[in-house]
Image (cartoon, rainbow, N blue to C red; front, top):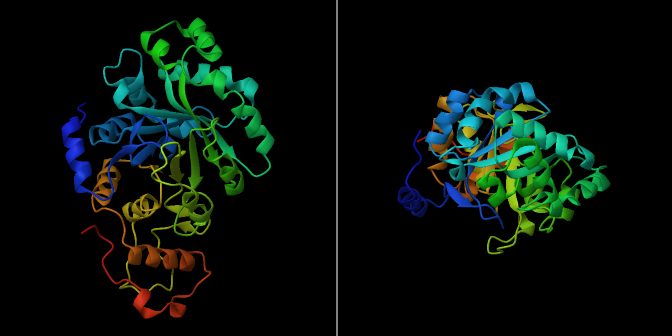
Length: 331
């Protein structure tokens, strides 16, 4: 495995209005704008390929959908396990959907045992719904004892897995995140000292986060929350690259890389979490990002496309000048 030299990353970033690498909110992490989760069942071989191509943000579930995530676990052990010479070049995010403060230690033990790691960069509490405000509050009260070095939880993990220099330096968890399915609750926790990273759904049909979350943030604010989006390519009406039935054949039919660019063209979005499944999809996603941000006209079109996809708008009601006619292939 090879990792691009820092000088080449700097050149790449200067050439793009959509930098591939960026500071992750108020953390001191540098993340790739494309994140790779294991929900699509990607293999370890292709996970390592993604890293070789420059993706450095990896998302792993130890409980919900673990059967889908487990094929990437060997790659994460190679990238992030004890003794890895490239650990500091990887951002490992893990999640639990067991939203109980008393479960934190067994969850961490499961993740440390399975992946053979010294520390987790971002530990997420997952799938926070609208009636779980108090549950999340209880979980986040652990943050001062879970995050950083020389904490209670570090001492417990050291007793189970032994002490390492990296663990002493980083702690067992560096930052805390939460994945929200309720945007009002997510908004309440923006920029909280107890929560470093906020993850929310955003796509062309489900755009509510753009007003409720993204517009509340300033890219110049050094203390803002890190932002991750998920569900870029699918919604209740199906896969978003399957065009609405009444969309004229000659109109632009966005593919997955276009939909990732849509997420990354929004204000203060740091990482678009993907469920890429193979090398072809990895290459296409990266090639899409290299095209830069979408134009305002492209974003407007995709918003209309999303409305047509969920059957809240018919194409004949769209002014012709708002339609974009092109091939769906990357230029």
